[in-house]
Length: 416
Image 1 (tube, rainbow, N blue to C red):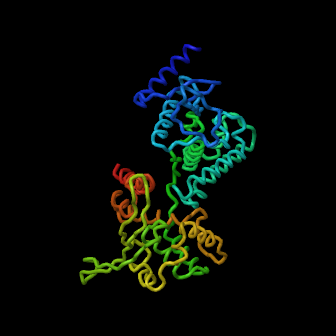
Image 2: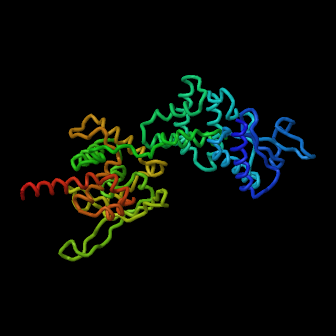
Image 3: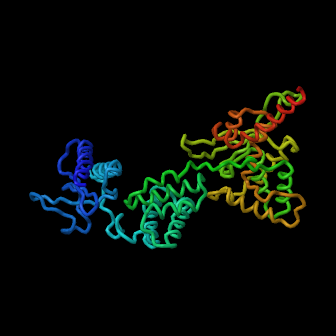
């Protein structure tokens, strides 16, 4: 055992020395089954005392317990941890772990009260520095609270068991499980705890199996029923303008912010040679991995049963505009989803609206009109939709190919 320890620890020490380019005063050792880093360059603790110090030749050598367990199987993670500590110390940004929080090896640290304390400290680090409080409430806190609820079910002695039980609260390969994994891992890293590598497969790719029926898009008769229900409700004329903009331009609800409508002259289309066409100028941009996307100009493409003036949309836009309270919200989509929920329950409604339709169903209907009714290519449709061709094909490819497939099979049967 001693020989094995000397082997991997010696290799780790050599690699660490190579990283710091031979700088002296840094040492690694194993004590009480923990890997420890010793150096006289570690800054003083806030509660400086004799504990954790070794007096050597007039210098104080401080000792830091690493979160990575000792052993050859974890030497790569240990090297990454000690190199990160060294780099932070050299940059003057490294700080000692909070002495009031339990260390990675302490029993009882997975108690729900401790996790709640960690969550509170984690939020203080993020809110205002990297994210807003609204982002924390929507995309961080729900996952961490669920972790605390699972922790309260029993006494957990192993990180991997608790975390895997918590992650199983969301379907495999779902975006929710992917976000839960990332939020919990960020909490562990902020607490300077070792994150179990065996949890990596549970993260998945965030792409759950697609519905075989494709996206849930409004049908033309459902769009008419929606507009009739809006006219019978307490919603205003400006609310109807907002819904009509989603219908004829295929907008994301958030793209109502900063939206502008214009009448433009186009050659052809009537005996005089010039026609007026309604276009929307989208100013709202969405951040993704490829940069900012979404800003674009879109021509009005209404359902087949509509008149070309889109039920006098431009005149109503100039008269009523968009509801100011709606576009001022951080998420107009949430408010419109609530409106649609009330319209579903409208007593006087004669027609039918499928209960699982959402405001995004109008955008899906617009995308299908582009491909099926107008015959635009995937690239052209994606340009008008404000996303990439790959996203467009993944979302709508099955429904766009279905009519062509049926026509091809029918022709083959008739010609056989």
